[in-house]
Length: 178
Image (tube, rainbow, N blue to C red; front, side, top):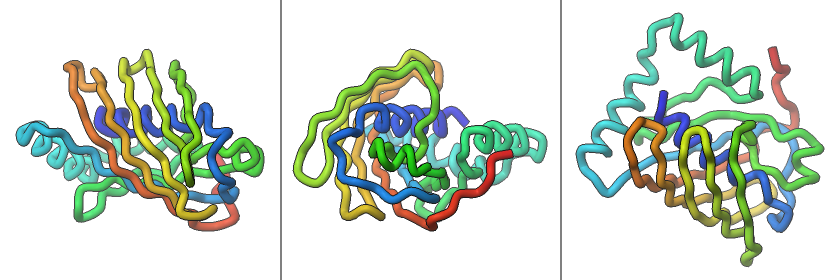
């Protein structure tokens, strides 16, 4: 669960200052992210955590699903490569502000610098304490790639992780929030 927090924190920080990014389409977006580190043991622990995500006890899964649904995010799924995928809604207003999906509320600040086809971004967050730098590149208004280097204490100890993500537009409509 904490590894999901790492990924969501980094993605949330991206959308705060995306005014220079190319336009994106409103609707449902799917983001698939793979978290890795330079440490073999930490990578093994991340892989195990992702596998365990699919085997959560029903009550814990329901609690996580309810929290995510309130924020317009689907329950995460784990791919065979260990990447975690979530779906989120981009409203027409978010699209007009050029916000990426998964704009979670939090105590984060970010900056962005325009580059060809996207932007460079840096962020810091207070809960969990984390910071990072990365690049988002838009293939078009329906697809993007992202690479982030993140330093976080989301698991209680300091970790440096790399997050590789792809985002793709799924449909023009968004599921209703509960």
